[in-house]
Image 1 (tube, rainbow, N blue to C red):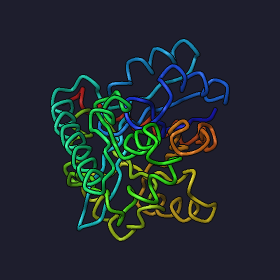
Image 2: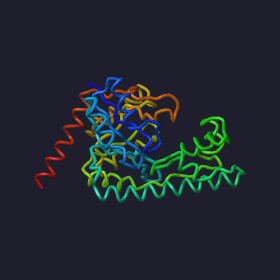
Image 3: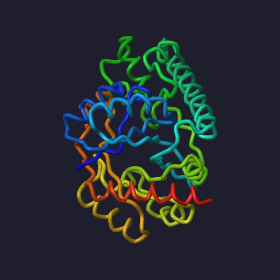
Image 4: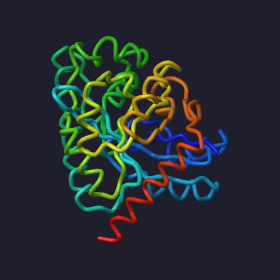
Length: 279
């Protein structure tokens, strides 16, 4: 029994619909999948139905961009209540900031004599949580760049002229938001953010797990974070971080979380539910 617990659809910056993603998960032999779109849970209901049709266990999720002591972190929320009003209210704020960021990136491109329109980007995105990949796709679509690599290398990467930083919520607030919506908070791809010194503080604030297995984690990196997970009694998760064709070839199923880790995650969620029900 294997799971892929880090996946994106076209409700954020992926290219697959929930149904297409579930179908690919079935072909990859996955027993469980989690949808972790950026700052939204809009695709979860459709993903749940598509997984149910294929006999795949579905776990609701999201990915939040957070900050602690000046460091950017990504936090995955699993088993969140997608109808939780506080969660949905905060996500509306995150989405509004994302949309404002698109306008600022387009303005910077216009200042460089690239006449891209924000409306074009929003049409390409066709979602409430647009991001840099949608600007890149619009640049390619309109003929201003030949491919996504060029769009990012010339304009959209950090330190490039049209780069605009993401809004980052406090990591401690993000953990609280995930918990109050019934979820478990997991640090995403720590090998990429390289902020190991922050893990003890995050644990003190209620961090539940760490994504040890990720497409961009080497075997030695995964082993490093497995040891950290053991040291702090953290849950172990993993996933491909598949964005469809947005970032090259689809990665779904390329990272498979073993059943023993999935079961511990499910058990932890059940214990949290039991505690809440007893209160």
